Length: 441
Image (cartoon, rainbow, N blue to C red):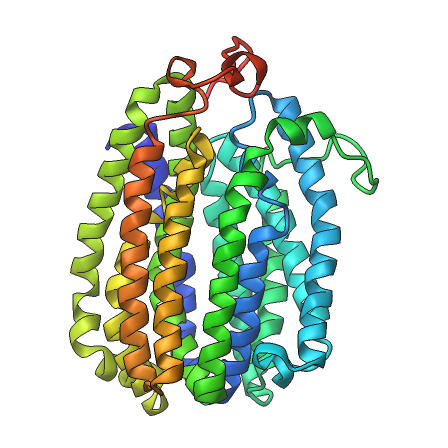
């Protein structure tokens, strides 16, 4: 516990706990200021935006901490921002079309929701690039401080808008203003990233983007499939159970995602920095670190989730209000899948450091097939929301078990371990070939 790594984990966990505490403190007010229908529309919008956020930088922002030199990391940062402008605009246009033609239940949203989505996504792209530099520098506690600002501003805005009528757009507005606060805070931190040149050009560093093509080509393919699965889930749930049922589902997801987000935000960037450092300097340590991390988090997660599994309905009614008892029942049966998510989330970037990045498709296939089977049964057999949630919990849990096993296999072939490599890439690819110019972690 005296190591710099342990102190960084402790500091970031404390900051994340503070930010999440603000989020939890606002929940009783939000549950009483906004109806399940309002939460249903917000959930439909929010799930679309958070899924689309996986694509806004084509995953090149994840390559920044793993770049061999600071010059390449700088080029990746600027390219990520330039790409994000076009990608965010295309995503916003796609949402507008879905609203216009009432696809997948999005017709309940107003036309200007596309503009709101663009603002959230582009702010998120800037945040991801700035925070990737903190990960590279192994000063991820700056991310925790910005997270406190995000939650404080977001919750304050959402509560304030709730007193003005409790419309769904008040929750969405909080997402925009919260990200403005987080980005401002991140840029004011000591040692914050600054662009080396003009950002507003169309020029892209083709050689650098090609060198790190594994990040978009391999990893984004699985993400795209998972996005289709998630959109299918949203469409089926919204069609079968309407905005009110979607609201109960989203409130359940929002609550269960809190501990997962806590672990991911407080641990993933530090874990990624440690995994990347091990990958460069001691590849044999990567696999034991990954396995140990997942098993410890799984054990702690099941202990923490036990009260929710037993008293979910009563706890939701007590904290959020009498309208949310069904969400508590859903949370009780969905909790095991959330624990598995909690366990694999912090060390999930192992695939970005592996020559076997394609193994992530094992999880993608398992998750897609099992989820689509459950959704098909729910549609054809007219399952209730509760039964559908039981099926989805089993499907998601199975997918994360496959994820863990795939990560174990991926840790056996690392991009910075040429003696383990297969084929000519060890010599031909500067991102893989050994060099004395690598930055000290």
